[in-house]
Amino acid sequence: MNTSHMSANKVIFRKRIMLIIICVILFGRLSAQADTNSIVIHKDPRVDLLVKKQIQINEETTRESRSHVPGYRIQVINSPDRNKVFAAKTKVYQEYPELKPYLIYQAPNYKLKLGNFKTEEEADPYIKKLSKLFPTGVYLTHDIIDVKLDQPEDSN
Image (tube, rainbow, N blue to C red; front, side, top):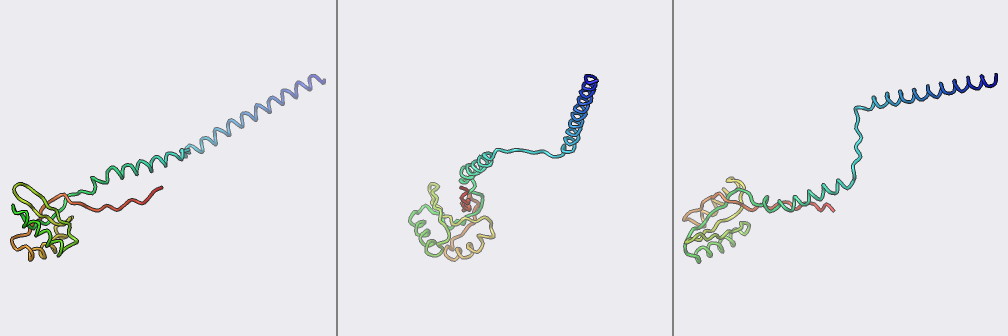
């Protein structure tokens, strides 16, 4: 009876093991199905450093092209007499130091243009004031202007 009892115990033991394995497999499948709506991503932290570095490179390489935009300048004189144009430039420096002068030579004339205005409205007050200094004519011209870009914060 001992041998038959032992073999019966082995059979029961095997059945219990099989039942436990089946339960574990079924529970694993059920819990896996419950988590199908969520995704876990493990990202290497160096990716963020590479993205920040690329942003910095893009900022530095495109800064120059973004500092020149379409806008307006005020032309106050157009003359072949170089001395006359330089005198006008000096007069503008004294009266309106905030306006940056641009001296342009287009043979045979010298032109003096002033300021970096984004809109016509921005230039209007200066046109009225400069008309008194230059009664022969002050003209608003389309031009590529210089704009000051904000310096990026140091991201080190």
